[in-house]
Image 1 (tube, rainbow, N blue to C red):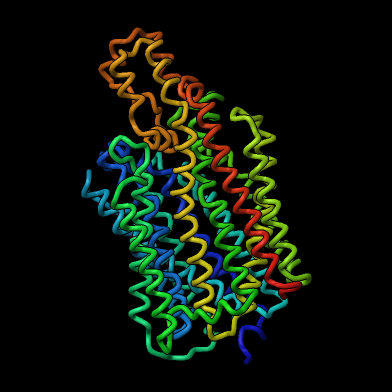
Image 2 (image 1 turned 90 degrees about the vertical axis):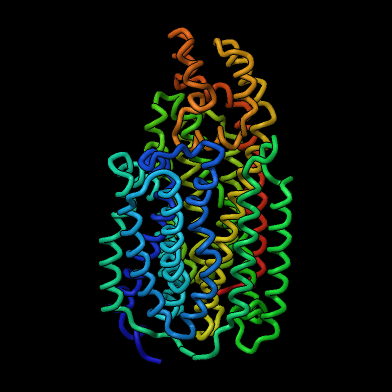
Length: 553
């Protein structure tokens, strides 16, 4: 079949358009994280109030939930009706709802609900982009160049998540609406460019849509992820919500719906998810490796931000209000490593196969996570930067060869579905990892922080009753306050109590060093528990990648 394969010029234009869309979607998925304090301040809502934390969680996780639920279905629709058609429509949808997000006029709970709903529709556009991007590139590039193309695309996707932190930190203090508005001109350019330049190259086989399978899969994902989200919320005096019956019901129902989905897919003539694809060893091994890799790194961004904003940056003289921007800057070595390694490893895997790069990359990622676990909480930045740089190199060394190998293993007619399955594996693992990371961090954090915090508050003039109340609050709220760039003590101790303290006492409690000194030991316990989990998942991912076969072109 002739087409883009015969035109290097159009081939690279295709890569540029697809990479622009993926970069825009991933930047927007993380830009909100840094801008959350400015968003909630702008709409007049305290995100750390118990009744408001659900808004906070769903602004963070809602985007990932939608992309996890829909990418397989949208990849399947791309196989049926044209991958470029779905991709171009995704640019338009994403741009339209970015504009609606930027013109929010409401305040309070109504504004928070509006932002969550518009964010879910924005995620629909992102899912249309990411579900078909790998399939479009696979159609456009010959097999001996797909690793390079996937490497550039994956480097953009990986680094976009961290670039969003810096961009959000720069623009949100001026006006939080700008974090959504900046996507509009990019989206307009991408929409027009895509409609003018992208060409359908994949095979299209019109067939009935598996509506029952689609709905069952969507319900299973939503119910399960709602249960996991509730699991990291406090419940009846417990730091986490895993004893909440609603969590158990949601998780159990979600798993039951997944079992029903598998039965449905085995019986319908044109299933949404072709289980037969998992008989292709390079495909199934790559998907499992991708899931485990995403599970290992899914909470890394939150962990690094909490570490930097809650401990390291305040200790080194940064005001809590300025820590979000500087946390993004401090993480840039990770992005630089990804930008170097993604295209390079993809190009080399085109020549030598994916197995050694993908497995070696994840094994080295596990070593890097172990190095982070053994760093002191108050580290020397140059050591931290070197470890992050090596982590970026290692993660990207896995990402592009693995995705290229997964797509190369598929028949042309199923590439949209396969691309969607791979993205779903990554996104669902990332949501699951966030719940697991916060759970593991809270287990370590709550083990000793309460008594130490109580003693320090009382020693600096806080009444015993209020100090006891402050230490009884959920550790997750304390972690969130650090994550959002707030001074946690200002939320743990009432303004009236602070007003009655001496100037010296108030200066110590609200100073940059007080909270980090209180939580350092407990935080390090939680940090090591979470990173130990990441190490284990990384080595399991390396092992899963190894079984793909001796060579995958």
